[in-house]
Length: 193
Image (cartoon, rainbow, N blue to C red; front, top):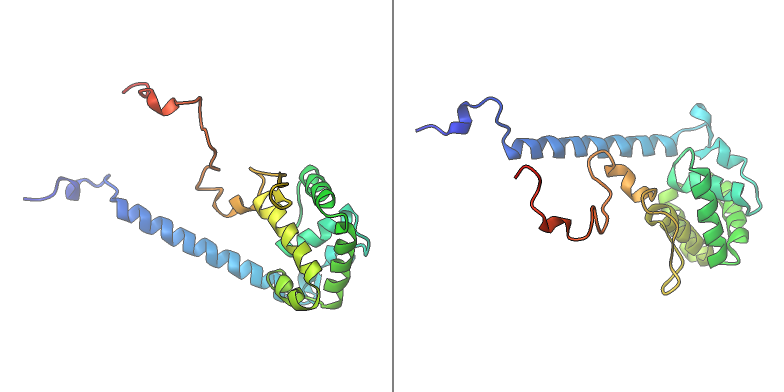
């Protein structure tokens, strides 16, 4: 006796879909890793100098919004940010830490003096020498990736849908929320059922 699904050419076995998805995810992760490696190892070609993006190399030494955005571009390897969100994140970080603007200026100066330190090792490099600046880097990354600024019980949500943590999976996952419809929508029988 043969399985009914063996002869059905339109039948997609669940494992085949999973394998395709896993293969796609593996390819995507590899492509992202290669792009990140290229961004941090390029030398002068492609608009960088010693691994520092050109916009960052000209970053203001002060700690204003422009310096913050240049620093954020270096730390996140992004070329741009939504200006409204950037201002909201900057204002929230300044409100949470009155030394934030000075720390941004100090981080820009430190990174320019340590040409090309990859963004994923900045915190580790600063941890022993300048722990206050390492904490500032962590606050910036937390704000961009999680959309959160401050510590409990004074945490401010500055972004949810725009938080960078959702970018790697935005083509396959819906951003989760607590309620996707009216309250108790799951108790109603679907239409057509």
